[in-house]
Amino acid sequence: MILLDISMPRMNGLEATERIVRESPRTRVVALTMHSSEEYVYSLLKAGARGFLLKESATSDLVEAIEAVRGGETYLHPSISKKVVDEYLKGPDPRARAGSPDGLTLRECGILRLIAEGQTSKEIAWLLDLSVKTIEAHRTRIMSKLRIHNVAGLTRYAISRGISSLERRG
Image (tube, rainbow, N blue to C red; front, side, top):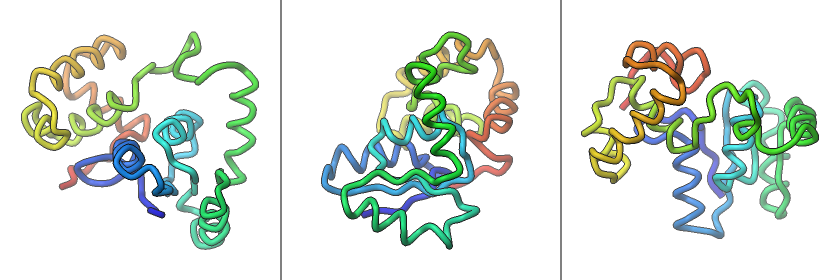
């Protein structure tokens, strides 16, 4: 079992979860975050996380989350489970619904975070073990989806959506 924060330096927790589950399918991941949006929950669950815990209540709920996940269950923090169920009842993944605020994929969110933190395409390619050309294609798609055409705008967007914070990590 791995407990990880989705806001980590170099690789975000969403991508780390995806990689951990792919390379070690029996490993269970519990994500710790301050973000309670349904988009984060959906992304984490799709990436393979089995638990979603808010930092604000980590002390009181951590043991319960770990025990639930260890027992084969999925744990969602109680304060967000209602949001998730409500969104589920509305229809498919919120990113796929019409009117979605951004429509970014998990990979695009990770790359956006690195761009917002000041990483160059070359640095991002090295960190994610992808080609520079692939990173530039992702950057182009991100800018197109968001209708933002400069790094300053991407950075503002990433900070306002909680994808990144002001400081550069790593």
